[in-house]
Image (cartoon, rainbow over all chains, first blue to last red; front, side):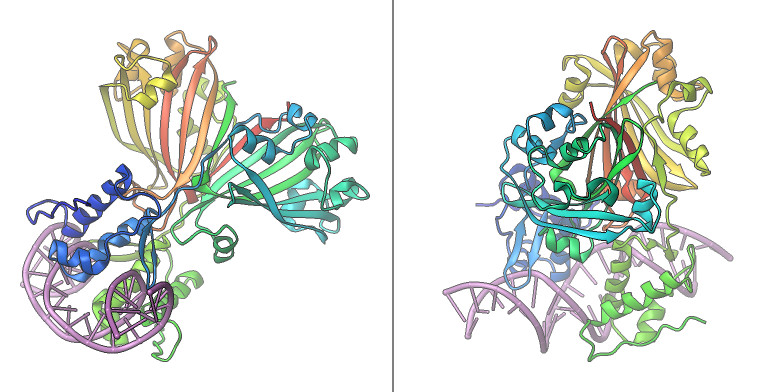
Length: 259
Length: 259
DNA sequence: GAGTGGTCTAGACCACCCT
DNA sequence: GGGTGGTCTAGACCACTCA
């Protein structure tokens, strides 16, 4: 049975804070495991002898921290954490492409997860101003747009959209749904653009409602955005990839020279 | 005069939502500019003819979105958007230290912001297991712990805690509040450890209540965490720096070789 | 229908800030 | 002291979910 402790009216912390702290500690220590239902508001009111607002305030704290999720008519449940994936800075190493693996699949398998990709869509579009600037092409140029969703162990963890100049992608498997072994980076190199380096711009924010839906996350869960630009050995940008990741599912690792 | 509109009881949205939407729109359109005080709770209660909880719920929405800041005893004010700071991957280049500038100050000035640092605390502590592992020292070793808060244009944007092995820091300005020109990295090099590279581990999550307080952010504002480990030319880890940044205030830029 | 969380009312006392 | 937001009480009705 769960020991919910008790609140101390002489404590510095207000009662709602004390209740939140007690519940948070139970979650952190595993007495309330992921998926478990919290005591209902009525039970907490009865147990602590406080007003309803007070327990709701406590639960609001935990919701804001993303620890629990409230479901109308059902209850409040401990959120289950998706598997964390570490993205090392060498994840685009050529050897992975040589082995016939795209970056996501190569990395996920290394980490012991079961990767999958779905919702692949490939279109030919006018380029947006932001992408045009990064690709150093004019706004009248067209790009192949490849979007897809990545899942680890069945849970959506990332949506990504790649933009490749039509000039590079036209007539290659890049413009097809199936790009063949090694993914689009292998095909870009086949097209004569040997990759030299990438730049990545990382930020984080709350998801839009659309992103919440496609990533299957509730309110209170932040996303990381990563915009990667790939350059060939002539320093020509050959791809821009815009990704939105479930933040808690990732740790990004980078190596930065001190010089 | 501000046109606060009115709420419609037959609207799909509950009253608190409608009030939040009205205020948000005024903020977005500039009728309520940054720094401006919102009508007080009492005024909103009177104006809309609702209970106090209802207007508080509306204001809570806006606080969660980071649009406004409540100040106890003073009022609720429109938040000025924090300046976005781009952190380039060369921000630790030696030339910045040579110029006598610590990384944060060097970068912020370049971006045209007014940087400041406060809440500096320096202690000598037992090392935690996580830090010990990164510094490759034993758990019986001690470390100098330097924590501080960074502000850009007066707004808190980051809190950081550095851990330097006592063996390196002892008797140097690293163990003092004022580290002198160039910051702790310059002092570490003075101590004979020429810096070679850093690794950075980036993630994002919701802030803890303590972090919300020190960063002065609402409940719905995510933070980025960045754990940096500095290595000298012998590949010896010389510092671990654990930072928590207001996510919306940063874009991190990295350069990744394609191998 | 019983149980859950979502929203609302109409009060109350408190802590903080300013003058 | 007067105004502000922070917390709390003790109710109420509603919408949603499940059996």
